[in-house]
Length: 118
Ligand code: DGP
Image 1 (tube, rainbow, N blue to C red):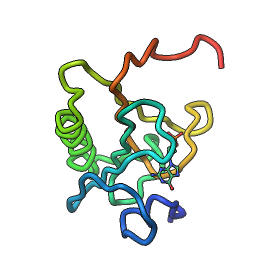
Image 2: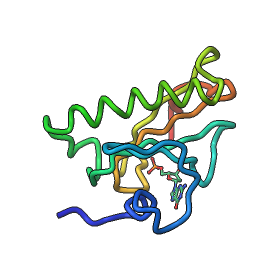
Image 3: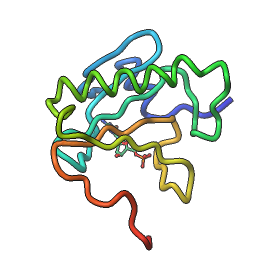
């Protein structure tokens, strides 16, 4: 069994977060340390630690992340100008919280996709 992170507590509303959306499969809330005017995390309610742990049974949940990202981008007013969706995976991907999450970032030009060097 994977170990719970702070995100499980956010899903269960045991600690505060600005939750923008929640349904039976996913929860979305504002990142505590925003890197852009709109910076939202969209996560499965089920604890999937990393992108390397996804299974076929998670297909609907993972699809829901994209649907919710699209709706929240519209809500944030960044659908037209565009945005970036990021999923960091493990050490080299600089994943900090081991509960799979999709970053939705926008509201400014997000720059080049990755640095050439760390
Ligand atoms: P990553 O590096 O992809 O694992 O990003 C983790 C993000 O989670 C990071 O941008 C900061 C955010 N974060 C960490 N702890 C909390 C928290 O307690 N509340 C909220 N809202 N965001 C958090």
